Structure formats: C-alpha cells, structure tokens
Length: 380
Image (cartoon, rainbow, N blue to C red; front, side, top):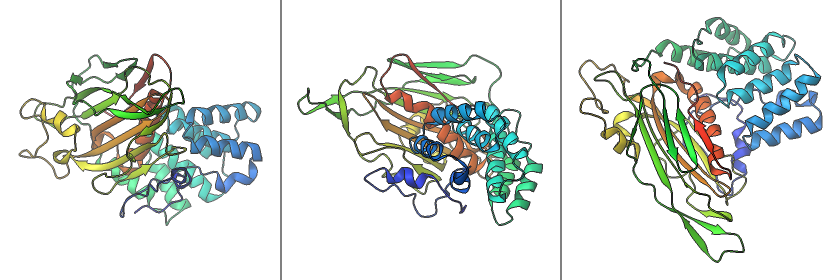
C-alpha cells in the first residue's frame, strides 16, 4: 500500500456517514498539500484554498492561484497549486507546464514539498498525449525521498503501458441526454442502447408536500477495439433530462457503500447528507463487470466481448472501473466507466484521471441549461 498524507480525509469528514476505503485499498497521495507550506501563505489565502479543495472546486482553485501569480509572477508555491488544480481538471498539458516550472524554480523548497510537486508533474506527463518520458524525474524523486514508493510504482506502470489498438482516425461521438450532452472526442466510440436507470426520490422545498419522484434517462457507448480484442471502453451515464425544481434533499443510499471488492480510491466532497456524492476507482477484470456495464459489454459483436482468448497475455482483461454519483441542486448524475489498464498507466494515474472525470461530471447535477461533459484525454 502506498503510504502518504491524504487530503481526502477532511473531505470525507463532511459527510454524516464514514466513507473509508476497504482494507487493502491503495490511496492516492493527493499532491502539493497545503500543510508543509501553509505558514508562507496569508491566512485568507490558506483558508480560501482549503475551502476550494474541500469542495473539489478545481476551477476556483485555478482562478485563485492565477490571481496570485498575476501579483507574484513565477512564485513556485502558486504555480504548484495551479498545476495541481489543472491536474485534477484533466488539463494535463497545462498542468505539466506549471508543475515543471514550480519544481525547477523551487530548489530552495523543502525536499518533501519538492517531491510532491515533482510527482505531480510526472503524473501529468504520464497522462498527456506524447508524454510519459519521465525516467530522469523519477530518478530525481527517488533521491529526494528514498523511502517513498511512488516513483517505482509509476516507473513500473509506464513500462507496462502499451497502445490498446484503437481504430483509425474518425469522428467522435456526442451523446444527447435531455438538456445535457456528453462529448466523446476520440474515435472508436459507438452509441448503444442503455439499460434504464431506477428513478430516485427528492424532497421538495416548503412549496411541495412530501417527496417527488425524479425519473432519469440514460445513455451508453462502447469504444470498439481492434478485431478480436477487448472493448477499449464501456460507458453508462444517467441524469434527469429536465430540472427537478425545488430539491432540498435526495432519498438515496450512500453512493460509496455496497461496492464489490477493494478499491483504489473512494472519496466524497459532499457537504452534508442532503446532496451526497462519491467517486470510486478500482481495478477490475473485464469478465467481472458489474451492472450496467456487464450488460453493455455483452452487447458487443461475437468475439469482441470480455473473455479469455488464445494468446491473451496475463492481465490483458484488467481495467479501471470508475463509478461516480452526485445528487446536487435540482439534478442527478450517475456514471459508470470501464477502461483497459493500458489506457491509464497505473494506480496513481488512474486516481488522478478519475478525479478529473468526476470534476467534469459534477456540473451535470447543478441548475443550468446546455450543460456538457467530456472524458478527460486518454493515451492511445
């Protein structure tokens, strides 16, 4: 298990129910913690940054850091925070640029802080297209903190990463879902019929008596592989096509409970029980996909669904299963996704990628028209 300080603990504490990862879980070290350098920020800056982090408001954290960098150009602390915000928004190229600059200009910073900045940069490089050549940085990080296991973990994951064999160039796919849309910009995605979601109940404001039933609509897609291979992705997403007016509380189970097997990451940024949310990331064999992804994978043409094949390498069917749910102001979003492990190199990168995916989905549960979401960029 990777041992590191984790900023998700105060985020979980916002919930009235505990959301600990199961025994044996690997928890991502959430990078660039404010603790080691908090004394060098003003109290108002520190409190505002922590408030934004607890809410997983990465756009707000990026704006806060950007304003500070306007006043203090090149400050490695603010570059690090802006890079971290961009990392959790799925903007790998911009994050890598900020984090590399923060590392290079922060030679006088404490070794532990430099390690976190450098690890964040290495993760951004490993996720972005054309990136991943981080051997030299991993050597530097191993020297800064010989006892930390993350450089070896990321090195091994990158060595095992390989192209999945997606189809050639083509158009992306846009899934329409009432007032929402989901953009799948990479070629290879095909829309399929989605298993219907169960309705949820919402308690209205004082204008309403009792609870109202909110019906959801779902969309789904599979990313087709090379002939005879496994799917390069399976996606299911549900939300309410029209606004659920006057919602004050949702009648739902804790979305972090009752998840099969050990997880890599389980966290919530909810402020209370009325509008819970949860992100879960875990490694899962394609043959063991839970519903509704199992049904979707079973709809692939013969020979292209999950299952062992002659010549298949050990671990070929392993992938990242991601689940996100949020019950927000007048809206719901429920999402499930499976991607082959080789599309996201290793557990550290999978947890970062999952956070960026959740950040893009969260607005779908808020009021507004014409809301859209997209998958964060993926390696080929």
